[in-house]
Amino acid sequence: MSARSHVEEIARVAMGARSRRDAPVVRSWLRCINDYRLDPAAAQEAYIVPETILKEHREQAEELIRIGRSGLERLFGHVAEQNYVLLLSDARGVTVDFMGDPTFDNQLRRAGLYLGSEWSESRAGTCAVGACIVSGEPVVIHQDDHFDTSHIGLTCTAAPIFDTLGDLTAVLDISQLRSPTAKASQHLALHLVSTTARRIELANLMARARNDWVLRLARSPDFLDVDPDCAVALDGAGRVTGMTHGGLRALSGFLGLDGPSTGTLVGQPISRFLDLEVDDLPRLMRGRPDGERVVRTRGGFALFASAIAPPASFRGVPQRRPAVPRALRELSFGDPAMDAVAQRAAKLAARDIPILIQGETGTGKEVLARAIHDSRPNPGRFVAVNCAAIPEQLVESELFGYAPGAFTGAAARGKPGLIELADGGTLFLDEIGDMPLLLQSRLLRVLAEGEVTPVGGGRAKPVRFRLVSASHRGIEAMVAAGRFREDLWYRLAAATLKLPPLRARTDFQGLVDHLLERIGRETGETPRLGPGVRMALAAHRWPGNVRELVNVLKVAAALCDDGTITLGDLPEGLAATATPPEPVGDTLALLAAAGGNVSELARRLGVDRSTVHRRLRRERGDA
Ligand SMILES: Nc1ncnc2c1ncn2[C@@H]1O[C@H](COP(=O)(O)OP(=O)(O)OP(=O)(O)O)[C@@H](O)[C@H]1O
Image (cartoon, helix red, strand yellow):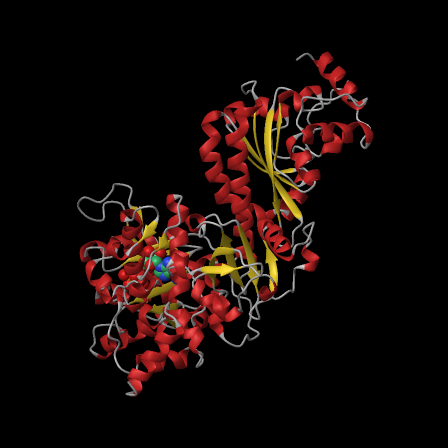
């Protein structure tokens, strides 16, 4: 269509003529003429906001960009081959995140498909982002649906993203510079953009509802855990604290309200909408059979439901505590011992005090060391040395480096050691108990003098690093037996952090969910747990700790069909423990650890309350 006939068509529509265009397009054209007083004949180039303004917009959208990033990357992965670019704009239409093929950078920038472009309707005329902001609905603005003739080559498809209180907060758009003439070519784009927007809303709700339950509802059980129709956050008393846009529509619908309005929904008890009390939520957790995870609306309509417990609910009475940096906070899902480790580590991270981390193999000693490192403002480099993995004759040169020609086979120019590489950063000495006695003396000298001398002589170099070491052995016993230098021990272990074994952690279920989500981020699909699997996992003793759990889940995720891990996907010994004969006394101890709350313990174990009561009776000898 020529620019002239395009302008004439808009003029006819403005005069009230009938149009073959979709209703959202016609409505937008009329707004452009009547409300924004735009002239269809005055073609205006795409507008890119100045750098400083873009920075402000990006800062305000920072949290959402971070939360949405993996969803955006996945979407871009699906459409990049067809030369789509992806734009995330804020509620004012400014593009705050962008993904596109850099080969077309110049063309994309000129077309406004770029970071910082402003696509508000009042500035750019009818466009997908602008129309979406005004209507709050997904929309395709295809080629000459655009108002301004400078944009009529583009096809743009956008979907809104609402915050947890129901306000439009961003718009997700995918666009092409060139596309087939038929608008129907964008059906798939519309579906993909809408699905991704829904997922970002869900991720946002989960991220913001850290102290709340999240209840997900779907008409079919298939997408319940990955792409539910709607999700609602509930506080400990079962009151609504936030929701996805689907949640807003659903809750309003349950009450028979005409237009959705969060004002009337937030603070309401969930029992107003569903035949459900807060105590029922544990039975709706992931891993339960679908048949048990059904709830009814007050109108009697059945829905599948899935509940995610707040990690914080494990913590019992909330206490005021100093802020713990995120890297450390993310290690615990509410286990009191892990929380205490994170708190202590947060305090120590800020100071140059050597830390010794103790814990069985696979409990996350290196993960903790890295988190301590990442919690520092200018962390520098993280250099990890596994003293048990390097052959004894190489440890010395690896750690301290060597001078030119220090020994046969040495590099002619010498080589800096790992200690020198850690200068300004963190040196993590894993399995420190395996360090030969001779090297213990050399290490002690480095620590005492603050300088390192390479093997074979040469100038001593000053070094400054934060030292974190780890051991799964009891070093005290080695000191007593004369196999570990006492003076080095005192230097290394100025402060100690003890990681609990996995079997003693009360946040096991939260950790499992976290690891499943991590697998989902790596593979594109978060695996679900089929009947009995959560219980089998909870019953295992986990001698290999978190590492063993990570491996079991990874293998099961690779073996499972349709994204659901069943007992058959678990290692044989583990599946057999699905209904373990617990040692007498265990349940009582666990109950005490759960603050005496049977529902809480049932949730932690992934069993129902009657099972807990039955085990208690058995342990007391009543049955
Ligand atoms: N809190 C945690 N959250 C998520 N993953 C964890 C956590 N702790 C440990 N892991 C995972 O468990 C595995 C083992 O962790 P890590 O290597 O830190 O253990 P370790 O105690 O240093 O082991 P080793 O004693 O054998 O040196 C890794 O895959 C790590 O990603």
